[in-house]
Amino acid sequence: EVQLVESGGGLVQPGRSLKLSCVASGFTFSNYGMNWIRQAPGKGLEWVAYISSGSSYIYYAETVKGRFTISRDNAKNTLYLQMTSLRSEDTALYYCARGQLTSFAYWGQGTLVTVSS
Amino acid sequence: DIVMTQGALPNPVPSGESVSITCRSSKSLLYSDGKTYLNWYLQRPGQSPQLLIYWMSTRASGVSDRFSGSGSGTDFTLKISGVEAEDVGVYYCQQGLEFPRTFGAGTKLELK
Image (tube, rainbow over all chains, first blue to last red; front, side):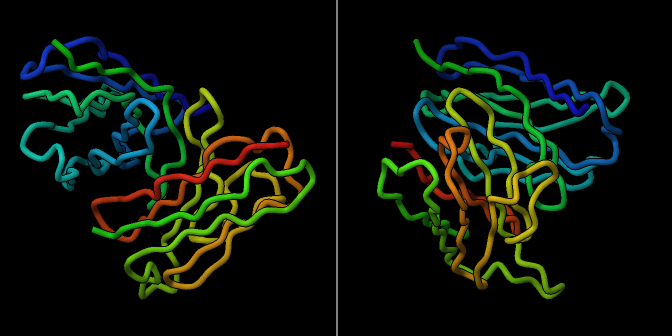
């Protein structure tokens, strides 16, 4: 069974940093591209970042480019999102999602990031 | 960026009725390989989204055949035949043609 478990969320002050993790199991992690997708409270879905299976290809949403860094450790079956210079508008539930072709076939339960002073 | 625009439903919908959810893209999602890179998701209340349809009309594994997808390069429809209580939630379309990936704003389905 595919499982994605996010962690690392919490309350953080504007301008500070936070690192999210997503541990994958139930599939060969190193074979799949991975994504971070977020959802602000009461709002819709916003794709944040993508990393290919071997980390050769990385893409970001314009809203986070230059502030967020996606990475992965295939030996640890873990996806990361390093977030810096956080803003109130980054407050959201952050999901990691496994890529399947060009869709998001599997999602974690999410980790909540709240940016507030 | 490709903009995805979704239509609304005349909520609440009577149980057993069939409904169609519309989605439009600002650019054709038909690729040179013949596939149309449009996906549909359902997010039930309090849950993570789940993939329903990919390549515009292919049901994901385990998805009921009451769900069907159709469309052209820019106009798409998700049809639910015989709405049930478990179908309640927000439906999102998403384009997988290019980065940044983009979603529609969502269409809420409520049951009468």
